[in-house]
Image 1 (cartoon, rainbow, N blue to C red):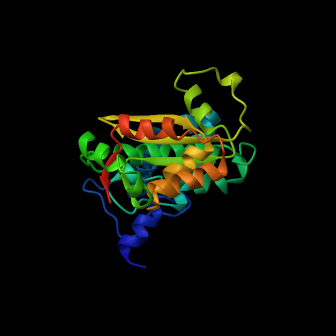
Image 2: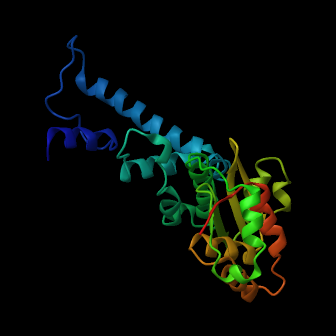
Length: 251
């Protein structure tokens, strides 16, 4: 193992000794100085996770979250200096973290929070103009082959748990006591301007958006959603895509 690898490994593992070969300019205790540096690095990475997963932290409490995050940091050190994406594997880690097993909804809440980060930092793409979209939709014969490209900030999440309600309760939108955590919910996440918006949608609407993102033609995506739910509310979800300018191209 190279000296750099030894140093990096010791930074996230308090059980490891101070790397050999280190010196200090004033001949102070190198091991003590390295210990302080290691603590600062660990605290900074845990703080970065806490910023991204604020609701996840609120659900388990600060002490539990920071202990869990420290284990994650030790096993998943960052591979880039850009901490924006640090934690993208945190939801999967939570799913396998035994002490959190009593909160089965926690990984999906974390996934929702990470999708909000991804949505915020998605590329800026000019939406399609209304006239072009209107002309395309005016030809019923073309609907079978009409494919809509959605804005890169658009994400959907389906969960067997009340992930949207849990998230919304921590935004003050509802009382946490009223949330039935075992109620399945689907979520639509997107950026409008500089704001990331999060809203609950029906499972069929989730299916519709997912099919569009997979490249299915508009008519086929709607048919797939209607097959899932005969009461599929196409006008509601389609009007959201238009109103929020989430359609960027027609193919």
